[in-house]
Length: 86
Image 1 (spheres, rainbow, N blue to C red):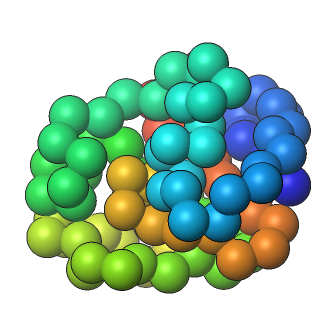
Image 2: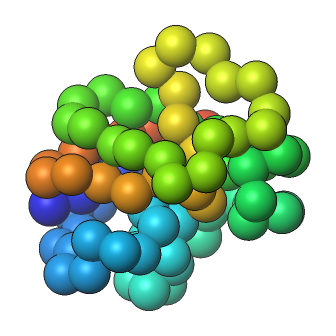
């Protein structure tokens, strides 16, 4: 399960090969993005709980605890705080 904060929205996911951004978008939830390649940082979010990995490392600087949903893949349940409004 994916839990989005601050709204508390809960999302079930089925395809672990999809990026976190793709999963969120498949539920028609708005998340800001520009490049989908990890260099603009627009989709930046804070990982509150869980584990994500990247097939390609982000090109933009991210702070500890931040993730880029456009590139990351989840491993099990996660909770994230979206910086943009949903």
